[in-house]
Length: 559
Image (cartoon, rainbow, N blue to C red; front, side, top):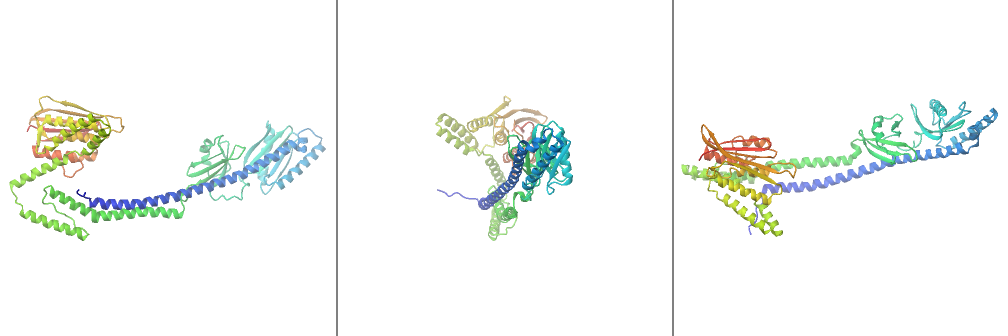
């Protein structure tokens, strides 16, 4: 069994690609794992910090609720002040109440002051912990308590007061002629907790409380919290936001952490990412070097040998190589070709033979390359036991090959070319998953008009291969029109083919509307144009453009 040859160019490229892909995959996995772990731990730390602070605030507010309930419902001095008393009894009860609440303030760190109105709001008693509540803030608190006293309030509730320096929670309750307000400085709670990771602020009733740099988030935040939620987190305005609802309240504690590069990775991880990018640059440089010094010289040498094989005896390697072995091969090939050219006679027979060889070379380039797919389809039919379809496909494929193998025929009747295309249509219907239709409009009495082989098949095959239709259910539609065209120069055959695809790309249109080139992108069309040039010289006309799909037109004289 003959050993299969391997392309050195491809082997070098694949070896480098596989080796670097393995290294790059390892580095990317390390980067993703380390960065993911770092971000996960950072999020957990930030969320735990917020939870600790929220738990502290929630615990303090729960203690104040308990103290307030005890005083509001069970303290006999406050209960006495809710009624109508003589001046002496009123003074005794307010003194005892003040003494009791001052002791609580000094003993209970979560209680920072109180304000009590009695005698229908005409008299007031208050006391503030001056380390937690300033004088100006104390006056604001008393004013707010007085305003609440004048309102028709039943039971007790939390309200919040923003001052220039602090944010206070006021637990206010009113009972007949007396009211009680306990003061809690929300910013004092949890001051021992570290806050270097972000800024803390409160949200209540869809409104941000206090002075904060994140006040512009208010509208977005108002839409986020849900009554059924106890926490949420997300990204807003360049910051990662955490929020936790204080238990048994509608007050939310929020923490905003500005997003920077180090939010996503630390310095060692950043260095690892830079190293990964550096390996990409190094691999690219190495690839460029190998491509320039090894792969490109080998490719040029291979191309020259292929050109020589195709009959271009003047082909030589134009550029030198850095590697000594390749340079020696180039020199040896050049010496061989010089000797061959000395021995070759320049004659008319040589010119004719060269043109014939070139014509056969162009025809061979046009042969379809879907036989492997045909064999695969036959295998599927065999596995499914569809013998009828196998017989049809074998018959269509044999007719297809019979037409192609008659390479000595440069010209065929139009009827033969049409029959070949119709057979190709049947082949495609056996193998192709997408539905298609070919509409024929052929003028009568043209069956014996001689045309170049594959002059219609080339464009039909292009439509099947390259027409981009988008949706998988869209049907490929190919319209083929063939008719006579009378001009002042004589009678011509007009072959017009169009499809409903996306049309020719601009670079392809520019190439195929220009002079035919060897080695271009559109090999089939360029080869057909060159064959027509050999057959008809300057009498052949062609045009290619896009009009709701690719449109190809070939105008041939009588031959």
